[in-house]
Image 1 (cartoon, rainbow, N blue to C red):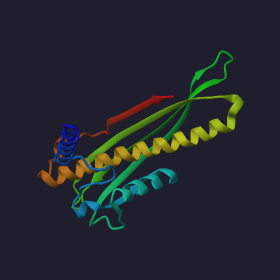
Image 2 (cartoon, one colour; image 1 turned 30 degrees about the vertical axis):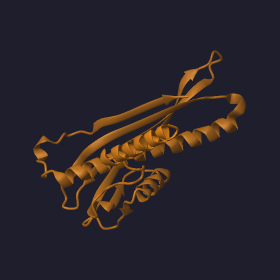
Image 3 (cartoon, rainbow, N blue to C red; image 1 turned 45 degrees about the vertical axis):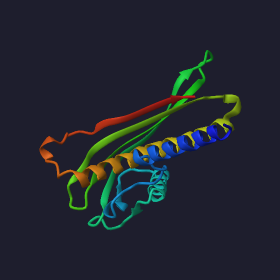
Image 4 (cartoon, rainbow, N blue to C red; image 1 turned 60 degrees about the vertical axis):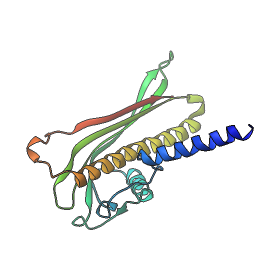
Length: 194
């Protein structure tokens, strides 16, 4: 009788493992891409060094190698990267009470053959923090950490968009450009207040 719960737990664990394997769940960072999609050529316009570094780091961790040759790899084109810092509320003494940080950019993805697989997509991520004029150094450090977090979130969204686009491009026939939108399509906006 004492072995029954252990056997039941073992059976449940086996079923759970089988379910996770069968549902397509993968460890974070493990992209199941074709060999062609494991290389990406990066072009950017007005993208800061920290954002580019974060993009290179996360793509490399996910098994996607940065390539100088755009003829044999997908091309990720980043445009219009803007960082914004705004006072989001004032205290009773008219001094900043909270600050909002926003990073927004647009990106598109082009296949090795030259067809656009992702029309320009706009991303915007915002984080806020409480400002304390009596502890400026600590708040400056918190701001740098939030900026790093924002860059990571933006790059993760790009990486997810890349994976989705490449998987669809590999399984579907090339789409006609006649139905493509003329302007960037906003797909992601995230705001978290601390």
